Length: 331
Ligand code: NDP
Ligand code: MG
Ligand code: MG
Image (cartoon, rainbow, N blue to C red):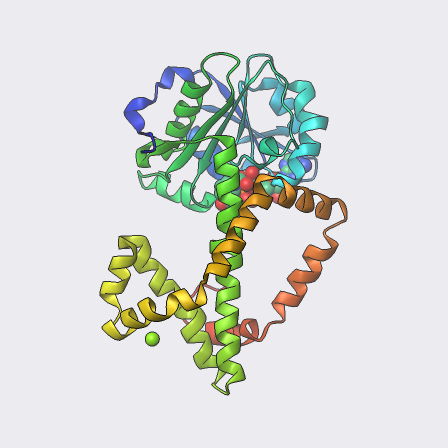
């Protein structure tokens, strides 16, 4: 059984008088910075010269400094810039300014697990990874709640790394919801596996395959869109709220019988074998190496694929249909 901690397990003394540098002010950065500030912690935001985020952080009442200076002041440096940029920023601006005995923190284990960031031995290294997007981390905090977090310690120089990390989760509201103890390895590998096989890769391919099959058979794209994409949210909401049984309780018995009799013909033994291969590649660092090299090549293949994917017919029909859905906010 996983170890789960809550607010009463956090000792505020481990963070009370500390200065936290939040590097980056995007999805996670703004949420961590504002939640900690509202919890009474001294926060400095570290950004590069000319960053689009600077104005927003200042408007939110925060002190903004160049990354190097923010780190020099910090007892805890939380790195919340995109994973593929962390290696360079760490080497050039963070590492030379890290105080001995301070803490280096992450919201995802990728750069540590795959050696893009190699911290000095004289600092604590921990991870506090909220299991939700930054805007939810901020909104739930202001409503008195929080998003559950994963917590891991990679390096314990002071002997207090876990206590500091736990106090940090309390500061951003995560301990109100629950904090699960994990490792950098487990968090990184499961996160990559989940997004590749189930959440993003698996899900989008499943939706497109269903849509393409119906359209090729002569059904209207609008109807295919509703069946294969739009309704997915309703099904996922039911599973999120009460597991698969809750979803199966809500759909018709006909749908439930179809679920049992056809699902395994779609996700076959071959699919499960392939999932094992994908997991092995993640564990062996093959995916990480490819993604790092792709970034070094200016994302040639990544951006080309993004353009191609945007041209799939489901995107066009979806755009038209969503324009008619008054309840969807325009983005
Ligand atoms: P975002 O892309 O939302 O934010 C990036 C921020 O970093 C922006 O403020 C950007 O500034 C700034 N930035 C970019 N380059 C630099 C630089 N060289 N120096 C200083 N600041 C820079 O990132 P996320 O919040 O999505 O991700 C941050 C971390 O959190 C990652 O490790 C990610 O894996 C993790 N995470 C993210 C989750 C999410 O929901 N998004 C969930 C859980 C973990 P500018 O505005 O100028 O571009
Ligand atoms: Mg991820
Ligand atoms: Mg139906």
